[in-house]
Length: 437
Image 1 (cartoon, one colour):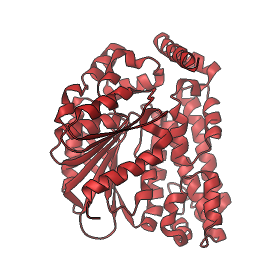
Image 2 (image 1 turned 90 degrees about the vertical axis):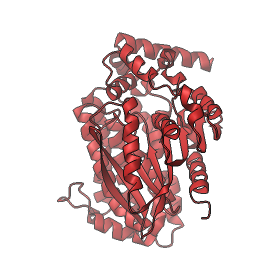
Image 3 (image 1 turned 180 degrees about the horizontal axis):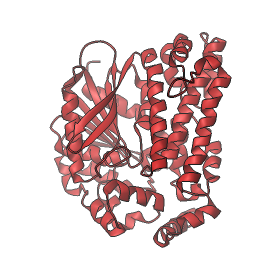
Image 4 (image 1 turned 120 degrees about the horizontal axis):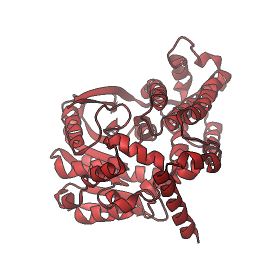
């Protein structure tokens, strides 16, 4: 019965998309009905949000139009910014672009040192328990942790408001999320012993704006290039990765071509974007050009697999939830909501559904699996309801040296096992890139 109910829901969502009645149906059913089940888990994990509370906030939105959608999430983000002043007026600076006194916040958090990485986005209950057991937590330090967590939540809510990008209002939410995230890096970077730099890389007809995170000090470090998918942002990837601050590896985080700030649509030519990024980073004075890894999440997993097949400079690759062939077939769009279809059209530059289908079909990697010679770790849930789990299975089977990790009873990108597969991929990459560490 649950399978039948889900199948009927997917057919209904597609019918609404084809008849252009998604907005009308959202007034009655709520926005949550039309979004993948992992939507709640994904953003709750990013911001340390209570899942039930976030699900209720999502369900209370009755429109995907800019005014309703962006306004709803902006109000929630703003409430957390205002809560910082309640924690301590010292952490507020009205003259700053973000309204935050970053120096005061950093000074108050200093007694915690590198432990701030785990306190930023854990659940409220876990954070309270951690602080209760923290001998260095003075009242001012406790207030600073509250303020820091408010910043992370505001970053998250603004990112939800930006989903899935494209319009002026959503891009404004994206800019606010990105600005607050940059402020966050200036606070926690020194505490974690990291140098966090904004990198602006000129590529053919476009610009990649990512973040390079390197350990402080001289010397060259192995590097993991990390890219995400259709509506993912740098901050969504970077925040959970800060817990690996002592890994000895550098990380470059970038968004997928065609999304948010990019000028050019995503296409087969986007492979050149990643080639240019790799070439640029190989010349960085703190990067070892002979120890490069690549991680792709969701649609970013497609580019991870593609670069594994084409780049001579990568020593290992992780592809999580990668669409490679079956996910690009027409039947695979059944159940994908209108808002995501529209995001795909914007990202690829397609003007019609048929045009979108042709552009996606052209991305098939089925005939390139055997070209992947480097060690490849393929990750997904075994019940991916957004893309095809079989793509992950086929990719691992076709590559020369692949390991497949499917998490049981989990969905797209194994989000219910997010921390487990992050730990797994970090350990796997370090074993290859830093075998003597």
